[in-house]
Length: 148
Image 1 (cartoon, rainbow, N blue to C red):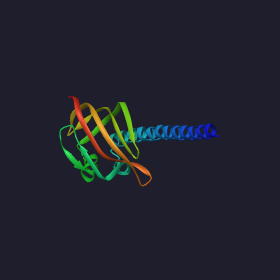
Image 2 (image 1 turned 90 degrees about the horizontal axis):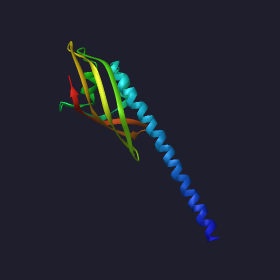
Image 3 (image 1 turned 60 degrees about the vertical axis):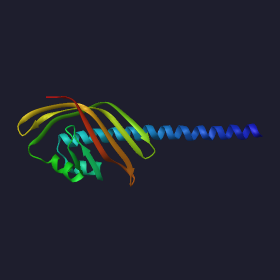
């Protein structure tokens, strides 16, 4: 009887562990999609899409040390001097901690600012939280690896 109870308990625990792993994998996939949607929204200067991705408490730290809140970040997207052509990410890793996710990777962006071309390659760290039934980014930080 004790062996049966131990086996049932073990099977139940394994089932919960598998469900947790499946859920983590599903959440990581959702977050990767959100990161790519963010990139597309920036290239297309889609403020509305970005509003849905960043928290009201969002903080952005740029590669040059400039820190901005949500309002400034969203306003910068509409700056007529800013014309991105490309924004891609690679080597992306998602680290889930309950209802928080830390996403790291390498980004490559290219375009013009004020008519002058730019190209940046760097690292990024985005912090997401599951809030109100969906994921929102609360902080983003970039570090330049190579600039032109």
